[in-house]
Image 1 (cartoon, each protein chain N blue to C red):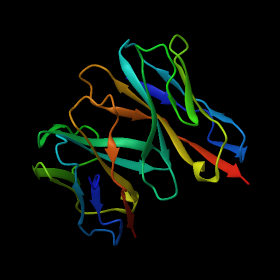
Image 2 (cartoon, helix red, strand yellow; image 1 turned 135 degrees about the horizontal axis):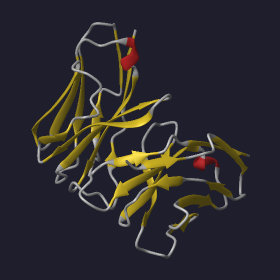
Image 3 (tube, each protein chain N blue to C red; image 1 turned 30 degrees about the horizontal axis):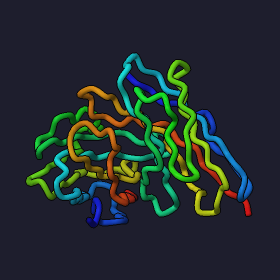
Image 4 (cartoon, one colour; image 1 turned 60 degrees about the horizontal axis):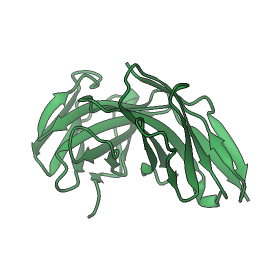
Length: 115
Length: 115
């Protein structure tokens, strides 16, 4: 099992540009989560998918952020237009089902820098 | 809403010594799970240990053990025989045992291991 795979590992973009972050969850995991990590706010849940359906997007900071999960093996998080305050590490995580008594498996994260 | 508090932003320990990282949480639920995650400089979030709230016995994983005090809502992590590879950011996290899927993190404790 290759684990949760995120790409790119690093992304540097100019303010106003569109950014797309990608995630491949562990095969068989039907729950997928996007988290954002910053020094000021720590780890925050942005959105949660179950069986490819967005269940809770209340953590998405604003309309510039959107996430999709077109199938069980792929998800994207898009920021358009990007702003310097979006600079953070974005993690994708998956679990076998919505309840996660064994915790989530995280990807290695994407470090986004918006200049 | 559940909250997780880690009161020690930074800790240091000498190699081969023992260190304890503190975590408290606030919840009105009786069924939940608690976790410690390790985040080394590689950025990967690694599950260290988990504890079910209904179990009185403290969880242990090799050199890592917890002191779970349910009434006090305390969940500390003890690292014995500290190694240089233990240097990392450590996050305490809470997960509801009910239908809530959200994993709530503390702000983290940065552990330095001195040779």
